[in-house]
Length: 231
Image (tube, rainbow, N blue to C red; front, side, top):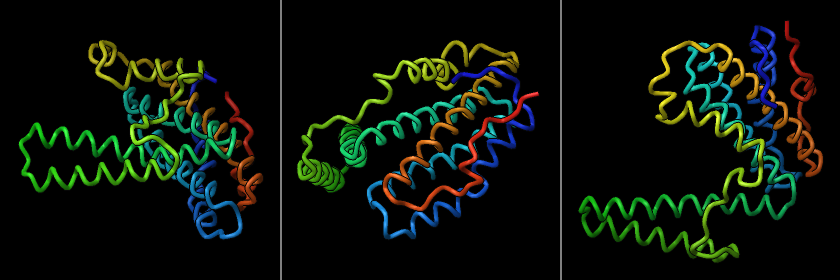
């Protein structure tokens, strides 16, 4: 899926067109009371994040910013991974939703460690401890261990692993991102066009899921998922 063709106006228009009607479609999903509530919430969350990343992707491309573009690219790959994960089974959908509590617990536990290191007052530390205990109890209620770790991203996905490796070289303060001074148009094209391919995958999976769980169908304009012409 890592395409290296030059990005042109057709590519930019194709990506933009996929999202032009997305806000109104998300509003329709939120207003729906007939379809599956779990998958409505999951799909809304993924589409909102995809819409946010689209804005970043375009801005990064316009700025010719490798790190920014790679960050948006990697977020799309993560969305693709989660979309594939929740598409496999309802159990996976429920587990991904539970991971919200795992993430909140991890944040609370890390905040507690920092508060203790910083010498915060007892009242503040006690409040964080109570939040940690509350989140652990909620995890147990959902059938998970209070020590449950977050779901790993892409451990079993070779394509994700390769794309993530490339993006990480630009996102983090690696030797490449610190010392490279040139304008590598080819790598910019690869990062952008790969993200465009992932967008198509996510929207195709969305179209399948909303049909399966009896949610409002994607508008025909969004669902017309033919790739952009390249000249």
